[in-house]
Image (cartoon, rainbow, N blue to C red; front, side, top):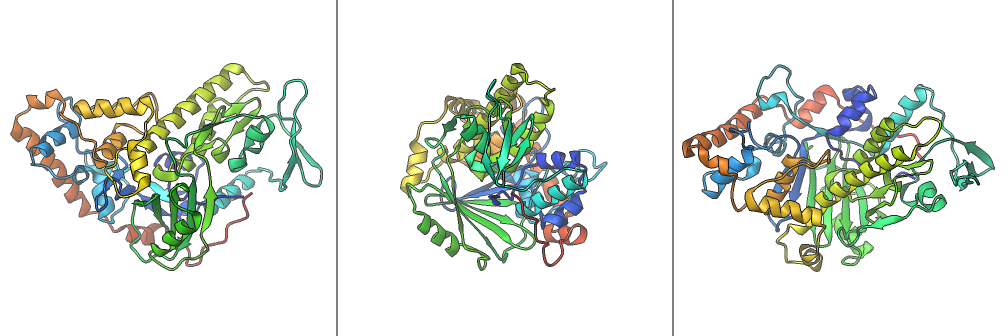
Length: 469
């Protein structure tokens, strides 16, 4: 069945939806959606502190050949600048509760480039896409898979046999069977790489509640005693969940604490999801490609679950095979998938490792745990002189790494040496002008809820989603 907790996304979904020819306002109405400018992280560095990992650029234009955050670091260390988030447009707009789409012909204004994503009801989104697909002639066959016969000559999947003895033959199979990995794992025996030693959360309690707080244009992640809690605001309700380690908190305790911390009455009984963070040893094996949870799972800390489904689809399109299956294509597909998973893994580990919390065994464990060499190298480089580089086409770029590292208390010892070629007054003016421009832009931005009411409000009673198997 559908897990149904992946309700927050990242900006690449806009390209995916546009490629499918979806009308954005129609899509928002159909899914009771809202807009997302970033993710607020509360209490991650230590209780009482928060920051936003916002989409888009950090600060204003680069001054000279040096990124803005180096100039900010000089001013901040001198006591002349505020927190980094004061100079990030999406962060300021998000906390102010404002939203609008980018303005065409706005020149160099931040209003010309407002990257955003969505919150939505995942079941409604799946039903919406199903309706679009079936209208184009896609055939849907309902049934429970009871057998997966393999071809004797090469071990490829020959067919899936459904209850009632109905057989569905095929040349290529996409395994969307969730954590079970019915084809990729059970039938083909493709192993699983366990990352629990780096990402120890292995449970999630999920529940929906009435919305009593503002319709904020951002997701919220609040650190808790044994993990973290999400808040995803939709037009008609709020999605909530507690991602936790069952070595530090029982399932019953997690559900009780989640219910205690809701902003409004619960609309359901909390649902427990059990998972092992990690990835498949192969994402494409023989004639099966794993998609979604069948390919692996990383907790939804940075809203990457739906993106990984869509990036697999995009990669499959790039490598779409002829009647045969070339080993070179399979190897390249797997290499790219492993790279994407590994770099997202490092980014998630950063949130746990870079903490000063000492108030619970869970936080002491993640603070002191060893980390992958690839992440340690990034941390060491940034701590030295504030440098960070995007490797190849990894999902999270420099702007994301900078915001999370600084938000989590990882500060550079020095700024880029070229900053010293500018006079103090010039750097101070540039940093202050960035803050001033952002504040001026806020004056023309509507409230997030007002924008939705004007352009894409859902019907008062959401339409029930079709059953999605």
